Length: 178
Image (cartoon, rainbow, N blue to C red; front, side, top):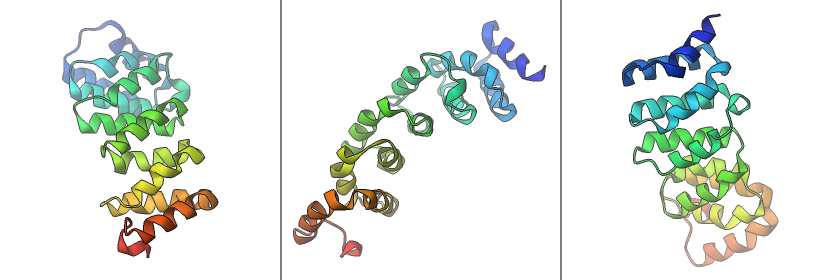
C-alpha cells in the first residue's frame, strides 16, 4: 500500500529536514490519514519548515485522524516565532473546532496578534462570551477583520447592539459602520 510507505519513513528513519518535509507533504497530498500519528511528533521539530508542513498536513488530514497529544502540540505552536506556523496551527485547531483553543485565540486577538486569522475561529468556537472581543474587532484597521466580526455579531444582535450603540456615540467605530 503506497500510503503506508510515508509512515515507515517518518517512523524511524533518519531523514534530512528537507526529505522529512517532502514526506510529510506527500502524506497530505495522498490524504494518508494512517500517517497522522507519525506526523504529530514533527510539530516540535527543530526545523520550522518541517513544523509548518506537519501542521498544514494534519489540518488537511482532519482531526479524526489525529493521535492523542496532537491538540496540545498544535497549541504549543501558537507560541512559535514563525508567523506562518502560528497561522497554520490556528487554522488546524479552528477547523477541528477545538473549543479548548478559544481562550488562546482570544488572548492572541487581545494582544493585537493574528487578528485576521483568529476572528473567524473566535466567532465559530465561541458563544455570547466572545461578544466583547468581536465588538472590539469592529474597530480593527483591517477591513476583513471588521467584516468577519460584524458577520459573527449578527447572531448575538440583542446582546451586542447596546454595546455597539455606545461605541457609535463615542466614535470608537470606523465610519463605514455609521
